[in-house]
Structures are given as structure tokens and as C-alpha cells.
Image (tube, rainbow, N blue to C red):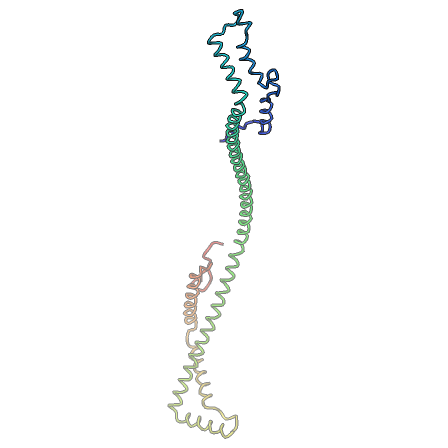
Length: 282
């Protein structure tokens, strides 16, 4: 609701002072007949000394006439002697009222200025919100563009991680097989040398020959025994169905890869044949 403001159009203090000086005229020095008495006293004096009027009974001096003369003398005395005091008293009251009225107007003006500043700030807020909406729309466009690329980037990282895991797992399996084969070969050769006196004697002769600097072409019985074991192992492995063992190893690897894919929420899983299958819509 718009506040109703009433502004006064009173004159300034300087103008009021000039007007007051014009209203209150100074008493002439000559006065009544040069006696220095104000001319206003001529009225009661004229009423009293109107001898001709009294003589011819045109003017009757009674209580009412005397009361009128006294009242006129009182009014003239109050105007000439107490006029300034009355004016000052009334002027102070008027100035006090004017001051209060001016302060009230100033408060209203200040309130209107604050309201104007608030409305201006509100206008700036509207502009700020419009700018924020523009930035938000641009951010959504950028997020949509990034959303198209990010899944591809994530899929690439997931595939690389799986390839590295498969490569590392194959290396681990190969190392385990080599270690197991060497342990088995060492155990078999050691057992054969412990049970064969001829091998022990041949190994001893070979060692003495090497110490003496014998011919390098002499067969090493230990090396020959290892070669013989590996040849036998190869024949045994050929008899075993490698497909079954490969399926077992693949199943173990698939299970391990799927556990990692589930934990990291990958976009694909491996089926029982080891083929990747997508888990989310493209």
C-alpha cells in the first residue's frame, strides 16, 4: 500500500521573520501630540474627554461606557506592551510544531528512500537470477555433452583394466606351472639318483672330470636325467585332455573377473564362455 504523505508549504524562518517585522510597526517617537504617548491611547482619552458630547447629552457616561474605555485601554496596552511577548510565545509554539512536522516529513522521506533502494536492489536481484538461469542452461548443455563422452571413457578404462587383469592372471598361471614343473622335476631326478647307484657313480665321475678340466663333450648325467623327465612329462601331458583343464582355468578366471566387475559396477559381465555381455542399455 502506498503511504499517504502530506507536505506543508509553509514559508521559511527568514520569511516569517520579515512578515512579523512588517506586522509589528515601531511606535513613532513623536507619539500623541508629541508627548511620546502612543496614538492608541487617544481612543480612551477621546471617550473620556468628549465634553461636548457629554454636555449636550449626545454621549452618556455610564458603567458600560467606562467598561468599554477600560477594555479598549487594556487591549491597546496589551498590543503595544505585550505584543512582542505574545508573538514570541506563539512563534515558539509554531516553530516547535513546524519542527515536529518537518522531522516527520524527513522520516517519511527516508522511509521512501529505503523503499526505493530496496526496489532497486530487487531489480538487480532479478537480473542476477536471469544471469544464473543462463549459466545453468549452459551448464546443463555442457553436462549433456560430457554425459555422451564419459560412458565411452569409462568403458575404455574398464576394458583396459580387464585386459591387464587377464594378462597378469596368465602370467601368474604360467609362473605357477613352471614352478610346479620344476619342483616335480627336481623331486623326480633326486628320487632317481637316490635309488640308482649307477647314476650316482656317473654323476660323481662327471664332477671329477669337470674339476680336472676334462673334455667338455662328456654328457652330464644330471642334465640328461632332467631332459629325460621333461620328455616323459610332455608325453604324459599329451595324453591328458587339455580342453577340460582349459575350461577349468577359464571358469576360475571368469569368476574372478566378474567379481571385480560387480564390485566396480562395470558396464559388462562375462558369460560362462568368457564373452563380455553389456549390463546397461547403450
